[in-house]
Length: 348
Image 1: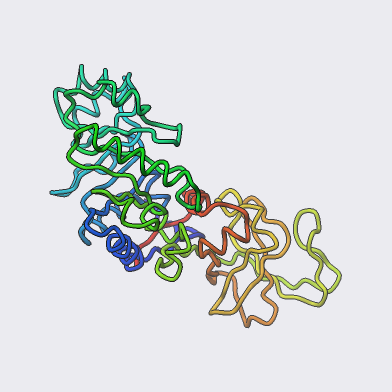
Image 2: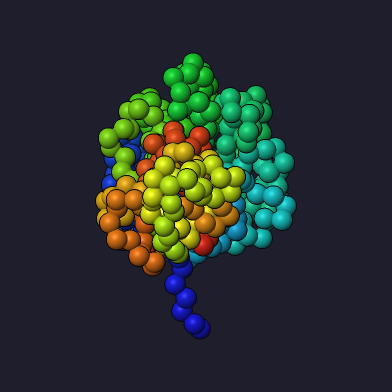
């Protein structure tokens, strides 16, 4: 096979990933701290994220689908994997075969598991106000769960990243569920929920975005470290003279003779047009503002005064999640999961 180098790469910091998990574990108090690695660990690569976090002591992992679960086999000894989307009719062979638990979220799924789950342990999702997945409280307390071997009973906070009254209401609802339904463990808090305090931790927390460098609430500022560092190769360096324009729509005009670098990067890679006006990169710590519109796979940066940049050099995109989210209007989740497969991912 011919080895071909990608013009895009994601430098991923295993040290920052583990440091983030350890901070979240400390904030979780006596509760175990798991990890949401759905959507290929928010785009970082679920297998590698699981490997790094398991080595650090994480034992509880969560994916969305059975396809994601199958891709992580075989599991390391002592590792627990749960499938958040439960079990559909077409999932039963995988659910009976793989060493992972479905998170049952509907009466139909419970009936299916009773019939075909062979008495194996399961997790159960209770809806306490999200109205997304999960049994309604009255369904859960009305006998639907009687006799199930429930490992973890979960619910999910809808507004934990805000100072919302809904947080306290969901907490009280989950406390009542805990008293009414027996399970080995109870879990409510996501990344933002961990920041709400010890009352939300119960037995197991399930951070996601904060593991990967996102700041879910103000309490995490200064503690969560950047994990993902996108880099793009310079395709061309060109002179643009005063009065000339750059890119589609001629949205940027050079006020003076300028040096412009064209990076092998664009919205097809998940670097969207909304970065225009706020996006930037660096080269040897020198700032390069984004100019003009982002194209499908080309983006221009102003390199005037940045030194001698040459074709083939690598630019580091400014991609701190909280600040990039504020500048672009994209959520921190979109910024991570949108980065495309043309980025070569490598861990340092």
